[in-house]
Image (cartoon, rainbow, N blue to C red; front, side):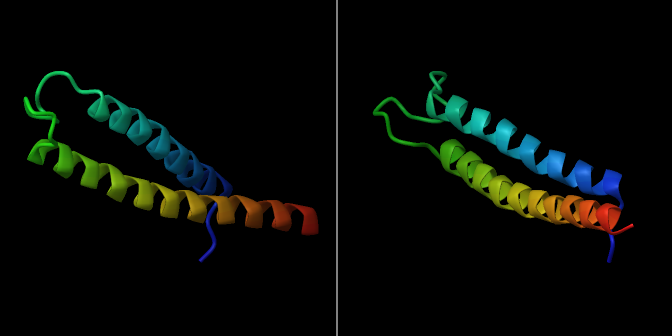
Amino acid sequence: MKLSRSASWFLLAFGVWSWFIWITFVKNLWNDGSGLAFDDAGDPTAYFWVHLLLAITSFVLGTAVGAIGLRGVRASRRDARAE
């Protein structure tokens, strides 16, 4: 399957955006002072673990989508040089 140049750039941008957004979210989750992520004793709550799992899943999927986009961008550049 061959991706268009714009689709490849979109997938690459989505992968980068996913990492940026979820890193920011994990930092905010870790520094949470509202009592949602950590209880009064400082132990992580179920909210923390569920959202950390969501973040890790998004890191993995963002990396996979970004890698597909990067491969498509590289292929389109190779094709442009070959013409």
